[in-house]
Structure formats: structure tokens, C-alpha cells
Amino acid sequence: MKLVFISDTHGKHNWIDSIPECDILFHCGDMSNRGEYSIYENLNTWLKNVPAKHVVLVPGNHDLTFESDPEEARAFFTRPNTHVLINQGAVIEGLKIWGSPTTRRFFDWAFMKDPGPTIQAVWDKIPDGVDVLITHGP
Picture (cartoon, rainbow, N blue to C red):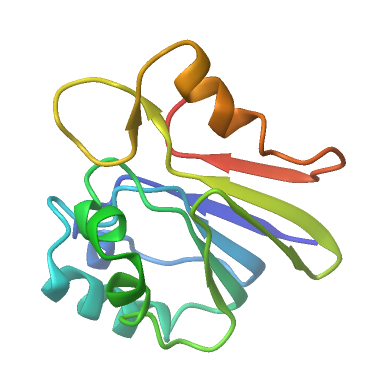
């Protein structure tokens, strides 16, 4: 199985020369600068030409729209077999995948949690037996 990972494109996904053919392409957050709809629309178009069977998107702290209105943000991604994971799991091609945009608090971005019990409550939701764990922050 071939997995490809990208992150922090901040609207510059078109600058990537090529994505190799793969089973799953993961975008590990910061697709946009500040949650701009125009970037999500353009990214969706770009993803339709990527040679991946599946795409997994995990928002990052710059993807503000995914925190304020996750259903509206998800609606931009119409490419078949695209999965948006916000502290959620999916089984794709037999792999148990969990995705989290949660990041330790700094400044005033999306998906920020204070250290200690607040962020630990998010991590405690990760189930046992996950094959691929995708987080935006360490």
C-alpha cells in the first residue's frame, strides 16, 4: 500500500509538481491561510486530478472555517473518496485511520486546546488499534 503525506500548503497546492500514484493521499492541515472558501474550491479541483484512490483531509490551525462551520467547509470537497477527519476515524483500504486538527494553544487559531486535562480529553478519544494517526500539531 502506498501512502503520500502533504501538509501546510496554505493555498499553494498548485506549486506541487506532482503527486505520485497512491492508495491514500493525506493532507495534514493548513490547507488555507485563514479558512478562505476560494482556496478550498481550488484545492478540491486540484485533488480531482491527483492519482490517489482516496484523500484524507485533516484541518489545521489555519483552517478556521472547519472549526466555525465544519459542515459548510466539508461541502467544498466533492472529489469522490474524500474523507475529512476532525477528531474522527475512518477505515480506508483496511487501515484504521484517526485524524485530529487539535493543537496546543498558541495565539488565536483554530482547534487550540490548553495543555493538561483539556487537550488530554481530545487525545483520550483516539481508539486503540489505530494504524495511521494524523495530527496537525505534534
